[in-house]
Length: 433
Image 1 (cartoon, rainbow, N blue to C red):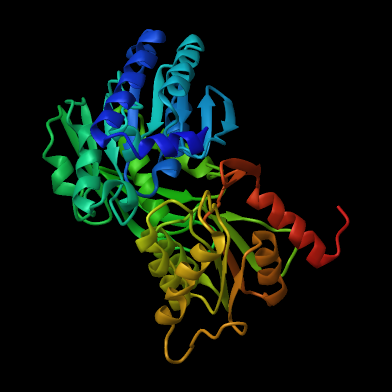
Image 2: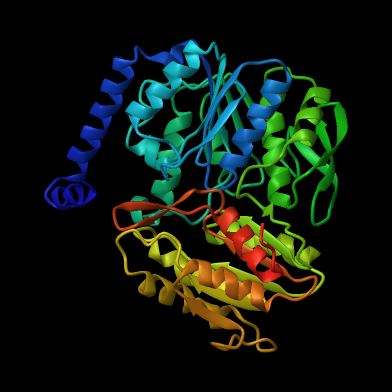
């Protein structure tokens, strides 16, 4: 089916294709009688941090007694029921989305937290959904295969803010924050680590958690977030800003943030009793990789081993940049397969690998088959990383995160990175179960 679609796309103008997307969105909304009109919709957009922020928002709302539905890249939620999103789409198709919302309404959910991608906005997958609150996380290099420029990418996201939402919440520390704050809204809230309406101060982080003081207006409260990294503090205060906009107390926000179990495949630790750390993360853009690598490097007591790849049929310009970041931060780099789709996985690996030696320092050059490897089979790459790891090392696997499938050709084959990591660690440790 996808092969047929790709064939016909060669003969269809972009304008006509977008029109068909809009038609699908309108038909889907009408078929389900515009179910989102019965809910308070909170949209989260940006390059990074959307999924974690959505989950934290849902936790805060739920902690305060609200009935919540949520749809993200990783998971769906209706009330207390949570299940994985295996579509490999941040915002699912219009029919699937409207069906989900209708089900949430039938289950008496009051709030919908919706991770909204730029693709979804441009293709009208969210047509007919009126957003009460819109939150912007950040903007960095991503999806330029589709949007062609950062300006276009930003402006597509801006459409989410253009329909007069009740509340706009913006990361004040992002370089394009003023663009999003210029849109009209009854309420505008900024968050950040510097000057903002909601901020985090007195930050202390270690390998497992972050302690900070959440400051809002004349109030503040200490929070021990069971997530590490400055980027997760941003996610937490973004979610807190949403909670505060709905008059949820700081105590309830604190309780929800401190009780979070995190999101599957987002800086997820896997411990099978090995004497080194293993982290699984979804980072798949240069900005995300740098954030993850900087966080782990700051707490690493020995060496860091990075396993990464890049998705096929996506922005190729970021591939050598990601390789260079791995070469800069890691002591050992393994480039492997991720989601090749219809590209040659070896070619993708080579394009990422080109950046690895460039990113390395003169004091620690990357030498192939010594501290720099190219292994097509991802399971073999993971096993290789574990075989090289010594006590107190950190092995960081990026790109797949909490996904449960790998896209090869037009097929989605089962792939649960965390479970595969567990299996390979068991082999390493000689465990039978």
